Amino acid sequence: MSAETPAAPVGQFSRRRLQFRAWRGTRPFWAGLFVLLAGFPIMYFPYAHLQVGHLTLAMATTGGAGSLIIGVLLVVLGVSLWFQKHVRVFAGVAAILLGLVSIPVSNLGGFLMGFLLSLVGGAMAVAWAPGAEPGEQPAREDTTGKGGAPEATDPDTTILKPVVGEPNDLSGTSPANGANGRHSAG
Image (cartoon, rainbow, N blue to C red; front, side, top):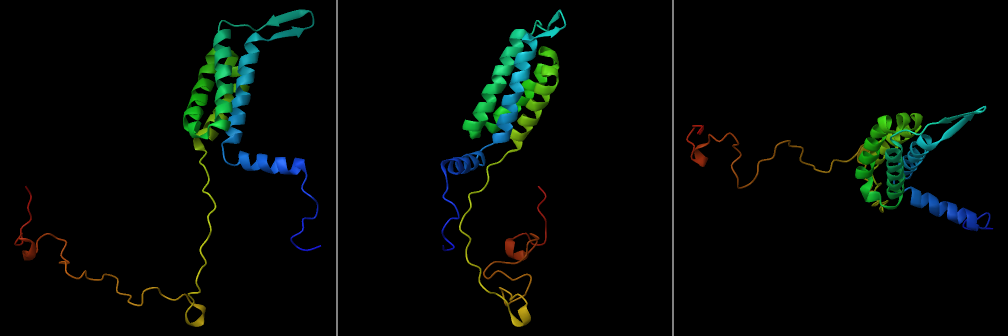
């Protein structure tokens, strides 16, 4: 067995898991998941009927249709964050605004569960930035001088070097530029 031989053959499950992990790393996956999950309590609670013994509590409000629309939009925004990562800022801001609107419309935003999930997911979507592609690093040269100290790249250590062919006067009062010692103030 050599060092290049894998210890165990890579199975279908391991290969799919690694593919999913690579796919997940190239997009705002967790932001999309939080926004997607935020839509469900906002959609569900206005239409829920709770049974307490023989008493049925209907939680339907006048904002039932509005809650359904907000919930569906949040689910669509969550899915679009997964598959269209270039809309992340729009989807994040829209998720935050829909979460805020769900407070008065949908039973405190799905009893604060949907509201908090949409705020966190929207903020994560706005803050997400694509990572840089790993490039090939150039080989570093050994620039150590005497005694292990780094060698200077420029042997001339003059701080300000005069530019050849151009006057070095930046004040604007040089006789070479025609100002004759006067500033032009208008």
